Image (tube, rainbow, N blue to C red; front, side, top):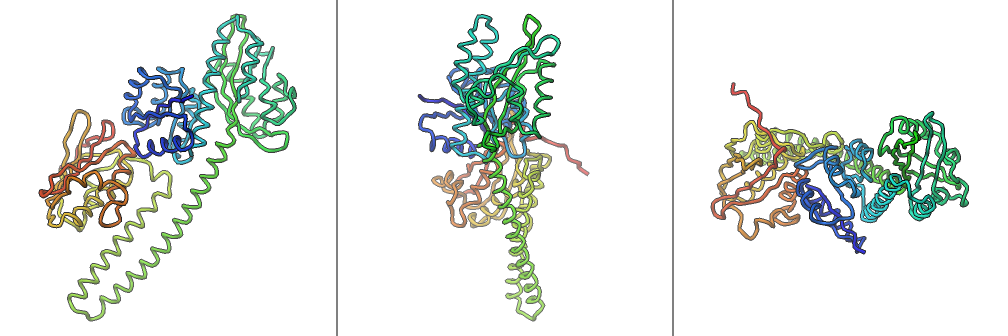
Length: 483
């Protein structure tokens, strides 16, 4: 049976990676992709899907508000939120508000993503079934137990009277299987179940259950550890809601899911990232040391009596060495999680740094700020390198902007020979070009992090023209001091 999924993700690279991961591991998955929340809404109103994957930060909606909007309108669908490594807290909040699960970009593979989707669909079906059962006084308890015993999650119910005293409970037989216990060991006893909760996690879990019942909280979520019969540890996530019944009782019910594999995969990837960061730091340190030695020898060589031509060559070598040093130093900030987050950046400032000591630039972007990845300066640096290397006769760069509806387009023009029509799209592909073949590819990928697009629209023979289109919400104007 085909499982239909809608992915709402504004980053084409992430969308492509997710789609390929699913297709490589699950033949029965069909994924549709939309870049904006509004487009996703239109699609969902006309098309059936089994599950929704949504990035919390989109061009037309940001943060927890993204989940709230889609959950209010399509609450019957299982929703899995996608977020970056630095937005875990926002993902936790989304889960507490009703999201079925969260996945961190870069920490998932096709198998994990597929399991997450399947489990989320089953949990949502179970939640809807439980809600209908709770609303219908005629629901059969025997049928209820038979249904929940067949699903992979623990289903539980905990009742207290108007005085807060326990008057009934139910724990599905899945609990025994999950803990590796003989059937019937846990029964319907929360005390027995709690005896398998890790001692460090038990007080917080019991407090959350008590407060949830007292305040009639909905979609309350907790992650904690269980100790199995063989002394191994499981990570689980419990989700529950509390409702007051007509007779004064409060009935809390919910599900508990095994998330061990998800947790360990995330921990292993985090450890791998730390090792890569350490390797990067050591390698950069060694390169910078050798650059220092090279600069020292260049200074010594200049002190010797050389002809004018040799001194000119040495100065060019010195300039190239400083440029290499600047590029290596730039990689340092990507080892610090806080430094890689997008931020508001002045376009003119980035252009000025990127073009310093190169071709003259007539810049008309003063006061324009973009919400972009820190590599914005590298984007303009790559555009300048492209102008110098391939423009052949370039003498000047002109930068300015134009507004279209609520979007804005930044234009980079040079007076070189331009780019042939059959290469306009190829130049953004990795590996295409006369040098490394990654410069313009990286431009496109780094801009797409915040939904910004770039394309080449110049006329061959008259010069290159790059258009950088920034969606509404990702740009703003700040009045500059003319003094």
